[in-house]
Length: 369
Image 1: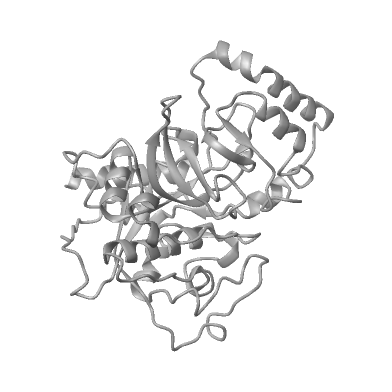
Image 2: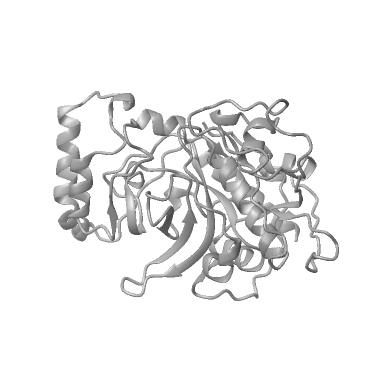
């Protein structure tokens, strides 16, 4: 087991460092790319020539001409304007994309499913189909960099329902994380790994007790705005996993996970289909936390994808969800995911064997920014 722990922590270190390094993009066929994307690239290049030094705070997040051109380029997915990024600039997007992996990620134990290499996973799986009554709604994040809090609260809420066989249906408060987690910076951003420590120690109250008040950066005080009489829900174990198979096994056995996804400009207008970043897109500084809750293979193109839930509202993507091509290193989805085991009453808990491993020291991780 020690070697497996080293691998997960080594991947955590690389994942954190990649948040600050621009990845290399690849293409399956140069000739096909030139034919399909020629017009699209010409439009983007023309835009850059006309605006050679346009700063991010002057570039719109959604550009109607680029969306129209992309939809005619046969990308395998479509784009559409949405309410979330209406009137936003790319600088606004970067400000709201601050979900990171901390230096402490290397100390998070591997999930017990990571080492179960003999366990086969189905070719497709979707938590929405197996546990429709356990799903949390898609949230409209607004201009608060709350992705790390929204994805974490959603994942733990759904896991309470899944692992209690539907007996515990609770919507946990992301505002509790934003306002009360001492290791996070509220609407400025936070880490997808360290946020679980406070949930383990202090727990989260329900959304109805401490509702999300931050779509417009509305401050909420943990001491004065959070009722002290509300029941709290805790996580008893925090774990991380990597690789496609490791992530699939964890989702299939225990429920959704949280990942930090690198965002490219062409993802902002994603509407439907299987997304992958294009050569014409630009990486946005930072990262955004999403929930991974399934995978599959497109019957026509045979492309393999992840099913993710976002926090950009229901009019973005496929009703707030997206299918994202698997194996795209630039996006970072498979580099490091984290999750927690809900604390259940003894009579409600499913049998579970705790896996404990000694922390493995590696080089310090660089917190992305």
